[in-house]
Each structure stands twice: as structure tokens, then as C-alpha cells.
Amino acid sequence: MKDRDLGDANLSGQLVPQLGMLSNLQYWQVQNNSFSRAIPRELGNLTKLVSLGLQINKLSGPIPSSLGNLKSLRYMTLNSNKLSGKIPISVLKLIFWGNLQLMNVSDNKLAGTVHRKR
Image (cartoon, rainbow, N blue to C red; front, side, top):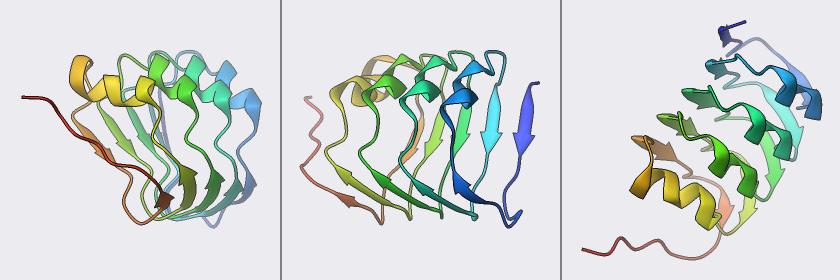
């Protein structure tokens, strides 16, 4: 299983921890559905993931620090949810020292500031 675009598919419920077992998954887009509850920390096991699109859902709780394990990740869109807390340092490191080119976390309930040293 390499690609899964399930955007705008009228899906609901919660993202289950078993998703972390899809070890060859590279692209996973489930934007604009009605997924709720927390992002499972097991998504951090998807080390081949290049693109993760969870935007425009009803996800809540913190961004799991385990997403910092996704060293191949280039695009992560978590915007327009109900995520709270601070962005984990492990995830921010993907921007500064990893392959992450785009991370959108706008329109959530996140706290704190991010500064890049020059």
C-alpha cells in the first residue's frame, strides 16, 4: 500500500493506532472529513511517509511527539482542527534538520511561538 487519498470521503470516527502498522505507506491524505479525537502516536511508525494530510477534520489533543520520527516527511498539513498544546520539538526538528518542506498547523488551538535562529 503506497498511496491513499481519502479526502472528502465523508469519513468519521477516530484514527486508530493500527494505522501505524502500514509500514510502506508513503502518502496518506484524509483531509476534509470528520475524524475526531487524538492523532495516534503510532503514526510515528510510518517512517516511509512523505505526505500526511489531516487538515480540515475535528482532531483534538496534542500533536504527538512521535511524528518527529517521520524523517522522510516532506508535507504535513494539520490545519483546521482542534489540536492543542505546543508543537513538539521533535516535530520542529523535521523543519530545521529534516526533509519537511511544508508544515501547516494554522487554525488550531496551539500555544507557544516558533523562532528560527539565524
